[in-house]
Amino acid sequence: MPLLRALERMLDAHMPWPAMATDREWRPLRTNRAFDALVTVLCRHARSAPDGRGMMEWLFAPDGLRPLVANFDTVGPFLLERVRHEAVVDPGLEDLLGRLEQAATDAAIDHAVEPDQQGVVLPLQLHVDGRSVQLFSLLAAFGSPLDAGLQDLRIEYFCPLDEASARWLAGLTPDASRPGRAQASARGPA
Image (cartoon, rainbow, N blue to C red; front, side, top):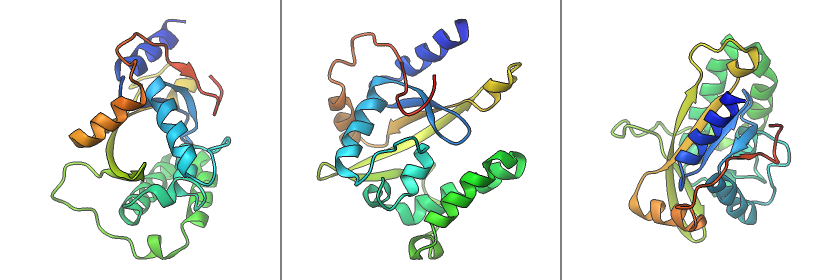
């Protein structure tokens, strides 16, 4: 299928940085090797794995990524607001929104810190392997899909915000210079 090959090329071209194609609830459908390597490292530090949850739910879970996100007090409310806005035009996201709001009923969300308006992007600051790893993401979607299934597909590219984060990420996939193939995610259907 030409579209699947194009999607795999897009994910592979982002190596050595992580990238994933997700459904509307941020469940990975296809991932590149760097994303898989990052999730493997994060699973070692989190108390739970994604286990069928979307990445957004894993990020908000107190036993998931949340304890690893140094700036969750800023990122959490920002992402929750994004899902609220998307749920207005996509009522299918209301269940996800409810689960996220339930997970976010603590002081970290109630006393949200406003993002630093000096920056261009809101970084995701992970504390992993004894270091701070700073990422930002770019989202892409098909502009005029003729297939209803493509309407929900989004591609998220994660990029390092600083040189130390770039080196750490590149070290997760030292063979990144070799052409690879994007993988159907074990966390979701292909």
